[in-house]
Image (cartoon, rainbow, N blue to C red; front, side, top):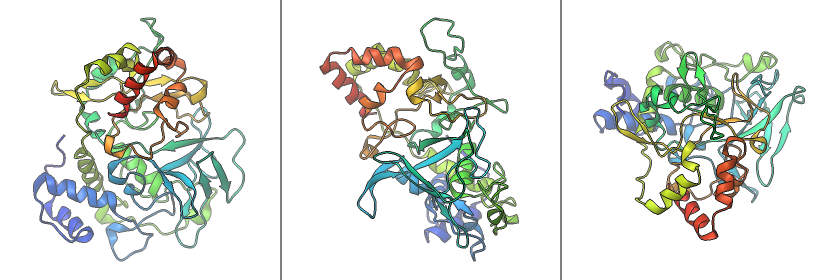
Length: 394
């Protein structure tokens, strides 16, 4: 996927010189390098001497994209400073089954704040989730949802998959009677394909969404300079912002988002191994019905996917009570299984990290995935091991 052919070279060079001290790479490689520099950048609160580096917060969860997506990967387990094992790259979302947010805390728990403000609280995720709030209790009816940062490798290519390819696989009324009724999430007239609830139609939308909620940085797509601050958080709303006329009057410009997207497009998923017997097991158990190995791209090419980019009701065990507008709390976008073999160490599985192994994750599948789960559990032990090895190797 090629992006930004009309981008001003001087802006890209300035980014590289500021962040890396080098502007020697040319063309698309320079764009990707500049995008990586922005992806890795440690943002600072406003005001700061560097106009294009400030605006962090006022409330936030991380200072850089790379904090949660090291090397373009996803959330992982770490050993904390006090010797505990916990998850890095997890956040707590707040909401109701219809997608309403908490009137005080907003959409998610912000665990860090700029100087002069206090964070909203803290959370630990292992061995079980424990949350401490530094303000009032959650509003009645508000639930919490753990959301892990997914791997970003290979995800940019999903923009090349046609809407028609996604739509033709939807079967919201289960007309074929196979128990699978995947559906498309239409967002402002466009097909959603990014985010745990398919709430973002494009990669640029997803990047802007993460900048806004996780780092508190505004952009033309997310024009909220105070991030997730709510009307009840008056001190947060009074904090300085880093919005600048040089950045489309925001803290992150469209060009900066496009550069980050170019970097993500350079993070290809690892090449798949040719393994016919294991692939057949994957298909025969029904896994491939939703974790579709390839989807057709705009030029007729086959895009490695291992997702159908549809929403599915995953049953009671995966219903945490937090939905999005138009998306039920039990519905989830089929996550791609392309996570990168080199990044698998320390992984947790499912949207909330509640599964320590792939087998544990399959065991929690219900709803539309129950038949596939049951087929997996009925496999002979040797076949079950072979299937798990196949999935782990993607």
